Image (cartoon, rainbow, N blue to C red; front, side):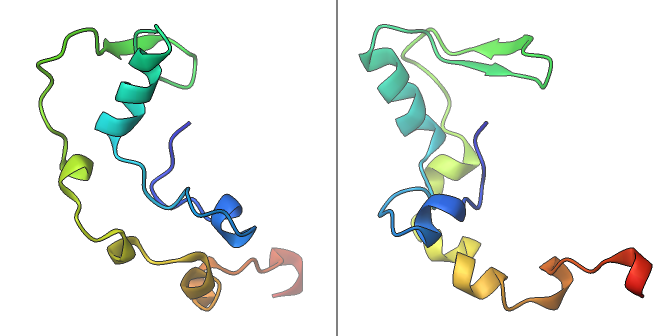
Length: 88
């Protein structure tokens, strides 16, 4: 799947993973001769991107990926920390 805030690879030192625009993902898929598609959790195709005149999506318009935060910032926020319900 595609995540909005991907922290695993960036926390491991990758230069990529925080934001890859949908248009760029579809371009890479087309470069290898495949037709990009959006699927649901049962892998059913919801939408095919088989033409070049696609509309720009909101994430394609993002100019500053830092607005999504970073892994380091997220782990400092208490509401995202795990708490064992048996110990509360």
